[in-house]
Image 1 (cartoon, rainbow, N blue to C red):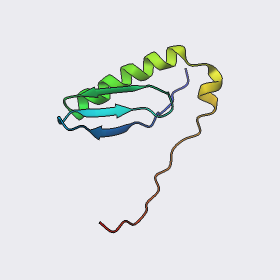
Image 2: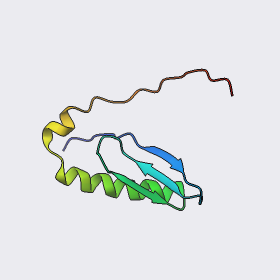
Image 3: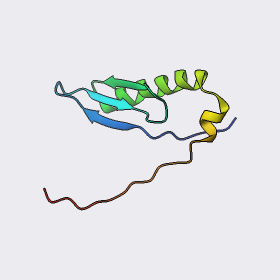
Image 4: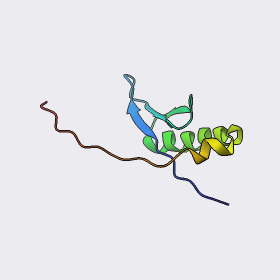
Length: 73
């Protein structure tokens, strides 16, 4: 079985919940009261998305990069 690592984006909302999404799968979002809970929930959401994914969907995924840009704050 091949293993994949999927990038997730973690944000907070105005109520203090952690909102998590996986940009590889359209509509793959979850949330939690803690980061750990949110990550557990997004793992389950990704597993559900993988059940519906086609092999070519996974083949197009190459990886992620982080780009640093200086910002005057």
